[in-house]
Length: 369
Image 1 (cartoon, rainbow, N blue to C red):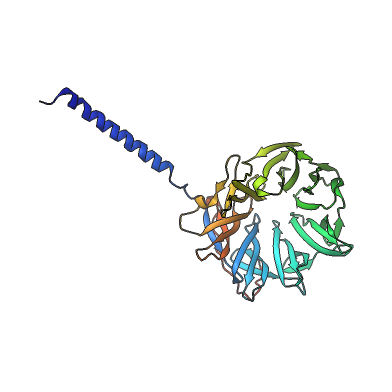
Image 2 (cartoon, one colour):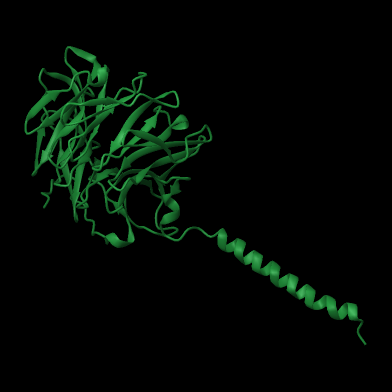
């Protein structure tokens, strides 16, 4: 005859084992990687061993830069299945695509053998130099809206050490001068309403927001540090950063004259760097933990989402930089393949569908359309 103690103890032990098994299962489930939410696609090259996507418009056209077989780096435009080598301005040796609008117009730089940049506008298969008046020493276009208005920074030939903001549209170049009372400034972005953002992050005045009617507002300082506008949406939402150093950077949203913190601030342990924002206010970029490798991320109100956890495991190398995002949520950037060679990537969200990607021969410029 078994003692009552033994009779009672066995069911209790079984229940304890079942509880521990349930807890273990829950812990294991919690530690599983996040389910993939993007379909990744590798972007090819123009014949060399490097490519990087720098932007994507709402039509799904992708811009970037790539090495060619001859060792030169050229800007590219990918429309559907075709990657086009945009070439350079006459006499130059390299180029870079920086921004694209919804019509497929591309702005960027064409570089001389001396490393001097000239601005270009690529439209309907033709690259045209953005010519400044008076003559420029160098130029860096930063953005273009759907009306074809281009903004950026330039240096006069007579004052190569001073940057100045400009706007260019339909062949007309306008020096914006000392917007907001600031010198050594740049125009960083322009939305479809014609509102221009920019500034000089080395002054206490911070950045500026210039309205089409000529009204200019200074953002001043946030938390005692100059506030620099980084990107602007069509609804007027502005992404603002304080300081330009990733280990000390804080993002803010500026709406209706008010600034509020956005996301986790950068620290010595985790550097953050936003790269682009779409009209829905989604921000992409990268983070770097200490001296570790960068990780492409989608920023949120809380911690950034590591995009490497949002693609099927083993499908790619490491996503290092997220450089662009369109209004459908498609993201482009750079990743490292298993052989450590860098390539451009496209992450397609579930509802956007997947394009077919074909690369043009290295020596061929394929017309888009």
